Structures are given as structure tokens and as C-alpha cells.
Amino acid sequence: MNFFAKHYQTNWIVFCLIACLIIGRWLIVSEGEYDEDESTWIASALTVLQSSEKWWTLFNYSDSRPLTVLPLVAAGLLGIQQGYLMAKLIGVFFWAGSLFFLFKAFSVYIKPNKAVWYVLPLALYFGTTWNPGFVSYNSEHFCIFLLTLGLWLYCKLEKTGHLNAWKTCLLGFSLGLLPFAKFQAIPLGLVTAGFALGLFIYKKQWRYVALLTAGGIFPTLLVNIFYFLHNDINSFWQDYFWNLFFYSYTTTFSKVPLSERFNLGRGLHFIFYSKHVALYFLGQFTLIIGGLMSLIMFSRKQANTPFRLITFGFLYLLAAIYAVLQSGNMFMHYLLFLVVPLLFLTFVVVEFLSTNPTFGVRWLLLFAGLQSIANLLSYQHIYHRQPESSITEALKKHQQKGDKLVLWGWADRFFLSTGMPQGIRTAHTFNAYLPGPHQPYRLQQVIKDMEDNRPALFVDIAVQHLSSQCDTTYRHYRFPALKTYISQHYQLVQTVDSVLIYRRRASTSM
Image (cartoon, rainbow, N blue to C red; front, side, top):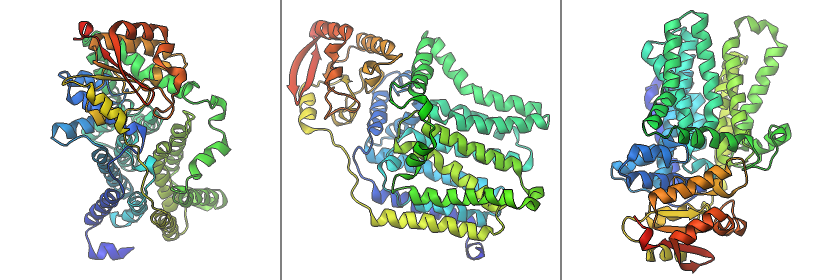
């Protein structure tokens, strides 16, 4: 383990790992929709970039995750064309940042040249994985970057008992941003914030308690003031809090009852069923279990055991498992929440509970290496869905400069293929047609947005072979209020592949 320290600067090694991760991912991914969510974020970015009120549009037309869309908007403002490959590479850069801050967190407790060996498995794995759920751009990437930044700052506090004022504010602020990147990340943020607050209170550092708290609530307070000044505070609570609450705690979007979502067998199946992650996760879980057995069997080690750090690590991992399982949906990209907490707890167990840390590191590298080899040997071109050309051509046929588009269904890829911005605040409309407690509000919101924005094209794409979570049961004309509005203000101009294309009547256009 001293070879690298003797011949190279550790920071250069870390940067080389980051470069390998980026290059490896660049060689694997290509232009195309790997996951429906990618199109959602790109559609939102296109809408913001074409809006005259960019901040308002960012907060209202980003499916309650403005911080997921913001990096794409920033790229667009720099002149980079919106596209799937661009979005995927932005996600890789967030993972590179996460790797760097995880390395910094490990370096708080051990020498940097040794900490490199703990982040090597992560670089190795993410540089070779081709799982669509892991390589597609999604809201987890920025969340995990924020969480890993917070983890590093917490580790500095835990080890030294002190953070300076600006780092304390940064810790609170980074965790306070999580609700605007992904609601599911909040439990992980609460664990970090709770332990940090506990340390400050224990040491009676009341100034830092205030700074951490202020940093944490500042983003939400600022956004509420922003909505208040626009006289629309209700939209914030409906679109952010209640929308995500109903997604998480009802059976509207997952038929799995709440009582079964945390079933042990179901959880283990979700975590280990994919060939893309099974070996990688297995190596770390076995080390954690071995560390627990060591703690129980060898009581003589307990005097020097950092129980606070171990407790934090376990609760941090439990919060990640909760985030993964809580919605009831087995989307692969949810498993990304496990990556950092699992590796962090593995590090704590190997370094502080193992009698032979070198063996633990080798075990970790072995399973990461086996998983990477399996990934490379099983590599195949990733299927990506392209917008159906006949539908794209039909939309462009009826498209005029400055037109906005409403898609009734979930097929957000057509925003990018046509270049049109959203005519309502969501790229997809499944919230407005799937039965649930929030559906009446969402349907009313669709009609209100269409009246306010008067989009030129309304496209009913609610057919199963084209739209996710949709079939002809949810055609727009099955909802009386929407049917009436469309019949009054729109005219059917073309039907292609069961897709109904309507154009707003000239007398009702803006």
C-alpha cells in the first residue's frame, strides 16, 4: 500500500481515478434515452432556456426537482446543445465530485495514500458499469454529490470536534438543498444534520447550532419567499410537498402496500437481483457483517471502538435503504443511494473493527474487480428508445416557430425531437390521470396551465406502446373537464399511430 505514496502524489492518483471514471463512462454511453426520466429533465431544460422568466420556469416546470434541471440549463446557457449524451456526462462529473469528497472524508481518519484504496472500487465500478439505470442522467446524481459533500464536512466535525463558521453554513446549506434535488434524499440529510447538531449541542457551541440550522432552512425559506412574491405559495406546497408525499406514501404510483415495502425478502431481492451490482454490493455487505461479528465476539476491542462513528454509519446506511425501498418502486437508479453509505460503513468497519484492515481492503477490491470484469464481459449495446419518426414528422408538420407542446401521457422524448418547450408545468401528465388523492388537483392544474399558456399543440399519446404507465383507459376524452376544454379550444388535425394531434384554434391562440 506504500508503493503509490512512495512514487506519486496522492492527489494526482485521485485525479487519475476520476479521469478513468469519466473516460470509461464516455466510452460506454451514447446519444439516446436510456430512462424516461432523462427526457423529462431535458424537456424541462429546453423549456427554461426558451422562457423569458427563467427562474420562475425553473421552479415550476422541473417536476419539483429544479436542481436536477439546473445543470442542464447551465450547459445550455454556455452554448452546449441539449441532448442525452450531454446529460449523461454531466451526471458523471457529479459522480467524480462525489468520489473526491468521499476520498476527503476517508482522509480525515487515515492517511490519504491509504484512503485512495477505498475509493478505487467505486471508480473501478462506475467506470465499467453499463446498467441503464446507473448511467442515465437522473436526480440521484446531484443529490449524492450534495450528500457526499455533507459527509466530508460531518467527518471533519466528528474527528476534530470543530468546524469553522463558513463550513458549518456550507454543511447546513448543502443538506438544505436536498428537497429541491430529490425528496427521497431527505432521510440521509436528516441523519447527517442530526448528528452534527448533536455534536454542537453536546459541546455547547450554540453559535454553530444556529449557523447549521440557518443554513439548512435557508433554501426552503428563500423558495417560499420567491413563491410568496409571485402570489402563488400554494403551488410550492402542492407541487413540492404534497406531490412527493403522495408519491411516497400512497399506492397511486406503486401497488405495493406500505406494510410490504420494507419486507426483508423483497429488499434483498431488489438490492441483489441485478447482475450489474450483485457482486459489488455483496463484497461490502459481507465485510460489514464480519465487522459486526468481530464487535460482538471480541469485547476487548470495544474500549478503542469509535461507537459514535459506527452508529452514524449504520444509521446513514439504514436511511439509504429506507430511501431505496420507501416508494415501493424497484427502479434501478434508486439503488444509487446505497453506493456512498455502503462504502462509508464498509470503510468504518474495516478500519476500526477489523483485526486485519489490509485483508478487508483486498476483499473489497476483489469483489469490485470481479464485478467490473463481469460488466465488461457481459457488455452489450445499451438499448435506448428513439422518438418514433412518424410521430415526430407529424408534430413538426403542424409546428410553427414559438409553439409550445402538451403531451397527454408519458413520452417526454418528443420534446427533444421537436425542440418545443412544455405548454404546462410537467412534461408528462400521469399525475393528472392516475387515480389518487392528488389527481383532481393535477387535472385542474393542467387545464389552468393550458388556459394561461395557450400552447399551440395538444397531443394525446395515451397509448400503451408509446407511453409509460399509460393505456387507452386514460385518453383525454375520458376526463369530462379536459374533454370539454379541448373540444372548445382545439381542433384535431391529424391521427398517426393512434396518437391524436390537436392544434389550438386561431381564435383562442395567444
